[in-house]
Length: 325
Image (tube, rainbow, N blue to C red; front, side):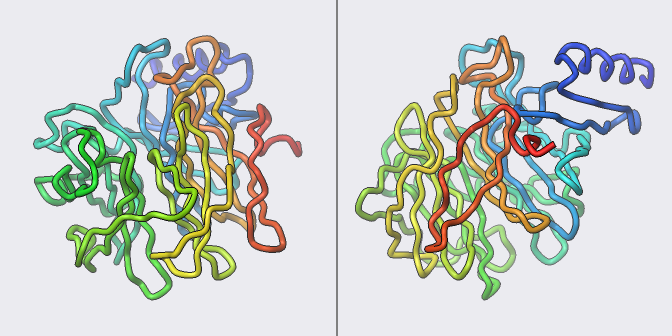
């Protein structure tokens, strides 16, 4: 097995023209150093969700299968980590769609990981079966189904009629220690989570405001006392954003943040502060020559704020965060 893994890593480095410097760490994980976007070129990755814990950034992603696909083929999720945004470690596969026995769709769609009381909770989409949640003792897993059933289903999406509306969960734990969940396709829903992170507390509500054309992929972060809701809009998707004084709004539309992601119809963002910088993590179809809407790749750019708190537009680049080197 060790020989096979070593051969694979050497093959990867050759295949991608030196854009990925890798070395074996063990039989089940390896270290690599990207030099440009896409960040990972040895696998097709999508729907990034970052979690910062101490001096470590954990990046969770979906996993598109082979390049040149026709339709979404996603059966598991991946996890990576870094301390400096230069050297990354890929960990063993932490979670598969088959870990959720009720998820008969077989689709491992977008997810989000949050930490609570020493446990890590991975909220995942299953296409039309709803949103599930898995739990682990470590961010790298392994994770197991925490409920044995969905946390949310289409029946909870009271303003929607299509079968894939209950997707794209995003978690935000506010400064008062209240956890929230946002999700949806076509309609943006949100609700409080109970302290145990596996039950909804109170009513499910939806977000609406002037100029809000929501497709999917909600993400909430807070900076300088303001709440930011970013989300995919239109199709092919751009990333737009709005700002508010309170997590429940009212939100004010602020415009397009990130344009269409090349040859990918979808986009899906994660925004985090790490090591005194803000980062905008997204996906495109940028692996040549088989990248596409169904064979996507995670990328990363620096993100900056204007003096009034608005966000400077994100320009997608090949060099990404490595343009200063």
